[in-house]
Length: 128
Image 1 (cartoon, rainbow, N blue to C red):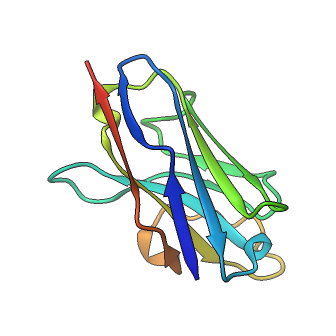
Image 2 (image 1 turned 45 degrees about the vertical axis):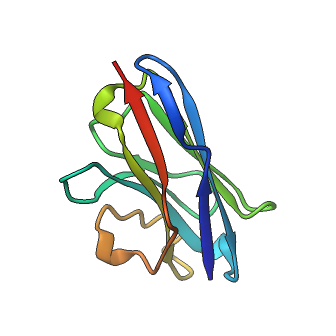
C-alpha cells in the first residue's frame, strides 16, 4: 500500500494551495480518507476526512470554511483545497486511509489510531 501526497510548497498568507494524495495497492473506494498535519514541535492533528463516495465530510474547527476535501474514486486520489491560508497552517500534511466495511461508508474519524495506512507527507509553508 502506498499513499503519496504532493502539491505542497511555500505560499503567502491569504493564498491558496491544493494538495493531492494518490493511492496504490489498496481498494481505494472502500476506504474513508483523511488529511492530517503536524507543525514543528506539535503533535499530529486531524484536518479533514471524507467518506467512501465523497458525500460525507468532516473538518477540524480550525480550518472549517477555508479547506475542502474531495476524492475521485476513478483516479484513486483525494485532494485538499486550501484557501485563505494562515501562517499557523504551516505544517507537514499527511493523507491517511481508514478501512471501513459495508454500513460504515460514512464513519469519519478524527483519531490517528483509526487510520490503517499513511503517506509520507508534504510540507506546506505559509509566510506572513
